[in-house]
Length: 334
Ligand SMILES: Nc1ncnc2c1ncn2[C@@H]1O[C@H](COP(=O)(O)OP(=O)(O)OP(=O)(O)O)[C@@H](O)[C@H]1O
Ligand SMILES: [Mg+2]
Image 1: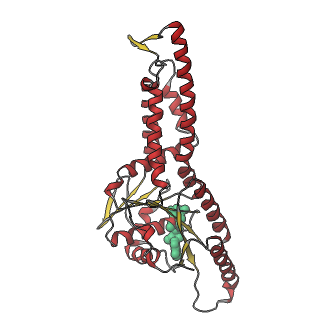
Image 2: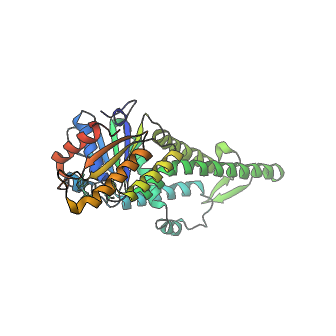
Image 3: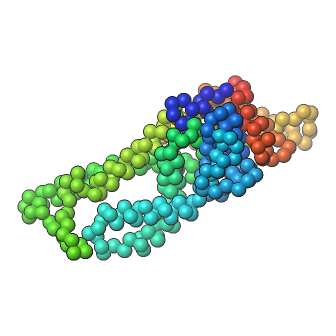
């Protein structure tokens, strides 16, 4: 049994990552079926805007957890809805912070933002944070992810955002410093907004921008503390026995290391196993053998499991149960 995939202290979080089409959805779905079968209350969430989790379970899913079996719940994020609500949330916060800046047309600004690069990553991170906040409802939360690039950018966001917040807080502190200096000379500056008198804040405790930065930092630190905790989070990398997926897995591993996110298992999916020699496939099989050897070298210290290429697409509960057992319990390749 792969203990590092089971809950230890509180709920366990699994991110199943990999290149497009290698079998992330199949692997994450089967893992969640196997976990639920063993009594763990499991939620599987598809973070992929191009959802196919429902196809693998052979049922319809939406953006609320839907019970599929005892202990097994599944949902697919609605990216468009998320981006909209993320921007709305931002807009409200901005409006609250900059009440005195009535000249800025926030609506126009946010209309443009909804097409800005990076917005999908931020909205996804917000959704992950929301799910983790309610994490105690579950024993295990499995995230089926979009192809590597987007996923790594999302997973890098907490660290990157913390750096940003730190810099912005320093800047804000300097601004408040200057304001206090000016106050000493000129007295407090007052404004009239919507008929109400307002004072330009000069102390961190009463500055809405500083408060917002502090609140944001706490939100991000919460996500970061979970995704960097090896007792909580394990990344499962899925690849096929081919060179390009191998390179991508190696790069993902390096990136995750940089962000201190623990990767624990490499699943090599769709390994061709022949019962008899087929001359036409010799070259392919030889290439596969080489990749498998390289995987052993590159990930010598890490748990690895090989899943055969099946004759049909492994979909539906029966298949997922069988596959999940393999991923969760089969002996690793040493
Ligand atoms: N071990 C296997 N044997 C045979 N077919 C498989 C196996 N694993 C996955 N497949 C098939 O390969 C295809 C891709 O699998 P899947 O959708 O799980 O990959 P993915 O990595 O989630 O893809 P995407 O990047 O598009 O989200 C599907 O048709 C699936 O049924
Ligand atoms: Mg998928």
